[in-house]
Amino acid sequence: MSDLSTRVLISISLVITGVGALDALLGREWDLLTVFGLSAIVQTTIWLRQRANRIPVTLRPDLAHWIETQAQQTGEPFDDILDRTVAWHRHGLYEHQ
Image (cartoon, rainbow, N blue to C red; front, side, top):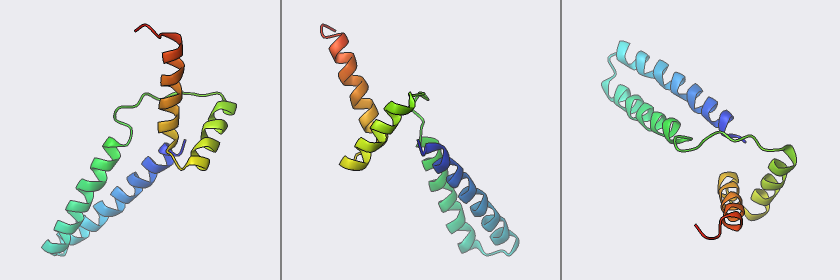
């Protein structure tokens, strides 16, 4: 549920990093430019991997609240609970596959 806001925050931090890198480039601060460049690479990797293998799914609000409650009680990520729940449901429907 909070993945969109996480991507937005990473995007904002990439913009800030880009401004810092531009300033370091114009000021000829090569060590600082290197730090900003490495930071941008790490942030871009996180941004791209965040949801690279997932398909957006819309859940009924009651199911989403149940999964969120389970995630808070167990400390397990929302996506892991959703994946496991769907797998259990699928296994019950298609036992012989």
